Each structure stands twice: as structure tokens, then as C-alpha cells.
Image 1 (cartoon, rainbow, N blue to C red):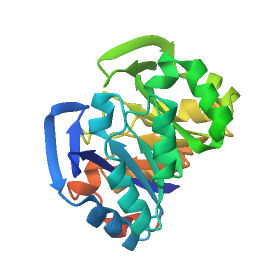
Image 2 (cartoon, rainbow, N blue to C red; image 1 turned 60 degrees about the vertical axis):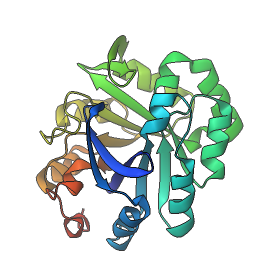
Image 3 (cartoon, rainbow, N blue to C red; image 1 turned 120 degrees about the vertical axis):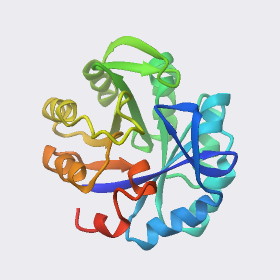
Length: 237
């Protein structure tokens, strides 16, 4: 299982929110490149980079941070937050991201995302599924839809999406443990999917549980920043 550390960006700084609440913001480092290099030095190969300003504004904002990290590390970066137009996708790839992370566009405008998949290649997109009670949540998790997560995933796997990560929004940023049972159900239904767990990781034991459940990757943020999971502990996973 691959560990994918997360860097969330507001005003060019490395921050974490609790349950997507901008009012519950904690700044961990004012130099994201420094954090990314620490991850790379620890032997990690991927990075989940989230433009929270972009997510709020509805267009990519922190592409300069992406450009800097991509240019000065060898990390494979997926970048998301504010990707709403085809122009945003181009900016993300031109700035050095290997994958564009998409979420709400997949719920609100399937035709547009399918078009991007045809233009850029479906394998260039990482689909994020935010879930509450097995239903898709959007809009910074403020809005729950009636879309069943399994139907959502099946549809986009059919469109050629190869990698999907899923966040149980009731757990994210709270260090209360990941939604292992949900992830087992997803992996059972889609055994060929490159499935990535996200949200709730609080310890190395949580990561072992995700690995044993069959997850191909796990996005880890707050647990690293709060010292619950040490970078040196991640090498054996």
C-alpha cells in the first residue's frame, strides 16, 4: 500500500482544516516545499496537494505552489481544488501535476468531465468521492446528495477512471480512525480499482488495517502533522 501524504494550501501556506471548515484552520508550515521535501526524504513518492483557496473560489489559485514542488522534488503529485473549467485542467498539468483531482464536477457536470477524460486521458484524473452514510456529499461537504457511492464509482470506472479515493466526511481531520468497513465494501465490489483511502487515519495501526482491507493507497494528513504517525514509521507499509 502506498502512503500519500497530503498538503492543503491556503494563501500559499501548509494548513489543515477539520471537516472542511475554513474557520477551523491550523497553519503547520509557511513553506509547503519544505514539507514536500521532508516527505520525499522519508522515501515517499506521491503527494496529494489540495488548493483550498481554489476550492473556495471555484478556480485554481495556488498553481505556483504546485509548480515549485513539481520543479524541485521528484514526487508524483495529484492536485485538486477549484478545477471547474478545461482551462484549470490545462494549468494543473502545465504546472507539473501527474494527476488532476476532481470531485464536485463529477457530480454536477458528468458530460464536462467525460470530455476532459477524452481530451487529456481518463488515467490522468484522480476521482474523489466524499461520502456521508454511503451517499455522495459535495460543496465542502455541506450538501449531501442522494447518489449512492457505489453507483457513482461504477459510472466513472465505466468512463475509464482508474484511481478513486474516498473520504468519509464525518471522520476527516478528527483522528478518529478510517471507515474500514465502507472501504472493504467498495473493494469487494470493484476489485480491479486502484482504491485509495482518505480521512480519519490516526495511527500506524489504522494504516495496517487499511492495507489489510486491500486499499492500494492511503492519504494521510493530520496524523503526520500532529505527530501521531512518524515519517520513519511509513517505510514498512
